[in-house]
Structures are given as C-alpha cells and as structure tokens.
Figure 1 (tube, rainbow, N blue to C red):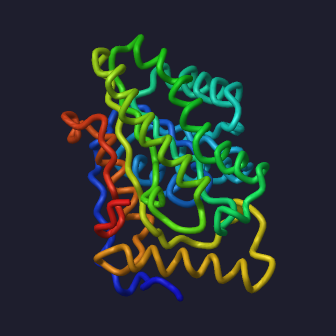
Figure 2 (cartoon, rainbow, N blue to C red; figure 1 turned 60 degrees about the vertical axis):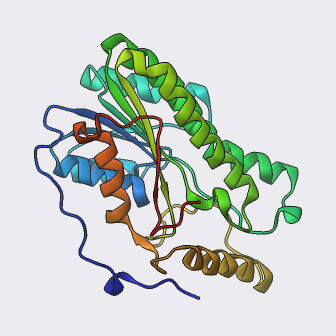
Length: 269
C-alpha cells in the first residue's frame, strides 16, 4: 500500500522572505529529507544557515544553499559539542537550532528486535537531540535568547517500531522539561511531531533494506497504520513539515514553548 501522492495535496506552503533576516540557524541531519527542506526554507527566508550531518553529501547541500557545512556524528556528545562549537565560531551566535537527526532503522514487531538493535535505535533518535541541546544551551544562556526546535514523531503511537517510539517519546520529554529550565533566559524549546512524510529515495540509507517478504510486510503495515491514523488519509510533504518547523523557529511563535505540534494530518500520536 502506498500513501496518496503529491497530486492529491494542496500547493506547498509559501516562504516568507526576510522573516529570518539577520538570524543565524543550525540544522542537523541537513543532508537530505526534512533537514534539507528546513535548511532550504530558512535560506529562502533570509537566515544564515549551518548544515550539520555525518554524511559527506552535506557539503553539496551547503554549497547549493550558500551555507556552511559541518560533518559530525551527533550520536556522541563530542560530535555534538564540536558541531555546535564550530557553528558558533562561524556565525558568532546561534539564534535557532533545529534538531532533526533521527529515523527508524528497522521496522518489525518488538519481539524481533535484538538488544543491540534496540540500543542502536535509541542512539540514533534520542541522543543526537539530547547531546545537541546540551551543547547549544551555554551559548543560548550567554546571549539570553534563542530557540530550539526538536523534530519528534507521531510514531510514539505506532506499530513495528517500539524502540523508535521510545526515543521520540524521550524527545517530547526533553522539549517539555528543558522549556521550563530555559524560559528564564529568554530561550524557547518546542518540537514538531511529523507523521508519514513522502520524500525522495534517501541517498544515505538509515539502515539495511528489508531482506525478505516478512520484513517488507512489516513495513507495509506501518504505512497502512500511518495513513489510517490520519483523518486526512495521506502522507505529508517535505514542504509541509518544513513550514511548521520554520514557523515554530520564527519570532511569530514567540509565545509558544514546551509544546509538541503534531504535523500529521490530524494524527495526534
């Protein structure tokens, strides 16, 4: 089963040129997918952007957008600290950090995950956000301003990816708890929870491809459940996800913090 495609959707949301004029943004997981769409949108809205990814292809994305590329493994605190430090040195400040690294590696019922696979899912989809928030916070506190936008998922209520759901539940908790701590310093912490999102084939795969009919069927079950859970009965687009993230990062959302916004066609996760 495939979700409804682009022809079934409204036109992509329009950018707002100048909305981020003078702003310095950092986007992680920016080599492809939602992260790259967010970086493009921020540049279209006049932000200066640092693109962070562990894939070398982030250099191509940065060249296309006139941004600055940083290659780092954000599953380790040392990688996050180095990436945020370089971004801060490059621009002198950080007004917005979009934590986008993450994604399901495997798709199968929980009893079929090995302990190593469970840990790998947590390392991929929880720790990059946890570490990057810790690395950026001293810079934001020193300037008494800034916004962190975490990218979570409505898959916290989804089948065949329990470890991923646990990781994204952790991202939601980080968002709520850190918002309380950071608010006295003029810092907002918010998140979106994307639902199913149509995107081009990944240039760098998240994990191994399905090896047999059973694994392919487990993935089809995810697609079917995702579409059925959404009142709009379709997948979203990269542009729709980026529009929500960039709105939350903007000054237009200045009275929003500690909130996780589902962007999933009505699926609340």
